Image 1: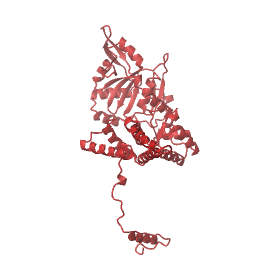
Image 2: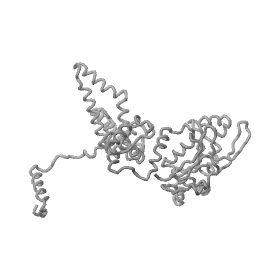
Image 3: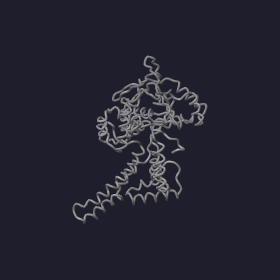
Image 4: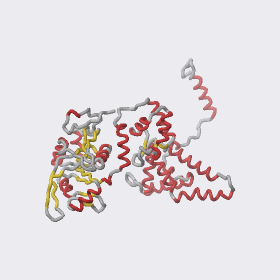
Length: 429
């Protein structure tokens, strides 16, 4: 395991460790980031001071609250949190969100100016919870429990309020940040994805591990089993892995490293009967699309109608059920035999056709009509329109043999004559 790197920024050299896997920006990278986002010189000076400063204050525990230090691998030091129910999940999100480049706890304080509820003007020094450098800009963040924000909004409505979409805001903080062309964001406990946070904490040791615990052949066997059994329940996989001489740690390590895929936002890993495992994210999403389509009222009419039609043939006629099972097997075979890249392309098309999370520019009307036609054809043939959006490049072209059978026979004899122990010359063959 990689040693947890603690307290480098807190100024305690006795607690410092090696900065393994630290991803903080170099000065050159910071300059490139500033240029890319057109950060003003004034803002660059401010940000550079924040990056070089220790925390403005030490966090403290209170009644009903637990403070602590999270050993950040991204930053290479211990990051303080004042609330294990709000700020710690915020740190976890920043630690494992790729668009967050750096984050600093308890950045230098600044003066907030706002009007009190009785109309008096007021000001006080404020220390935000974090300062965050992300791919799209820099911002201060303040994390609070939802019920606390509601109380503060009553007491100080000019400091905390909701916007038209119901999101919390801090107008005086935004005003200060806007002076530098930066942002100020209030984050509520309702923003926390607790399933994902629990799973990341569950996998934390595996995400920090130096390498696999078991031989590569054992891990490869587990990966192959998952590829051959898409959607296998995690508890069943753990039992199967044991029969392969793999441990539970091996399985969780494969999940942490992405060699097998689990939707960490769907179900807790601590409840393995609810967790489904796939070879990759694209296949998991494709299966979800197919399952959703099969469960829709429109598609459920097909098997029901078929069963009603065959009911007149008397008991024991399993034709409709057999046909339905065969169709499902064909669909699964088509999905399992498609590469992740091709599945991603199909999901892209599906997203635009259904307007569910479409990515990229909208295709032309002609292209959309073509995709619709492919879906309808697949629906008629397989009972699953999604498979009509799969790329089948490997099946394209005319594969009818073009050489006479006698030619193939002579070629075979020539190759057989060349591939001998004596190895006659190519010309002789």
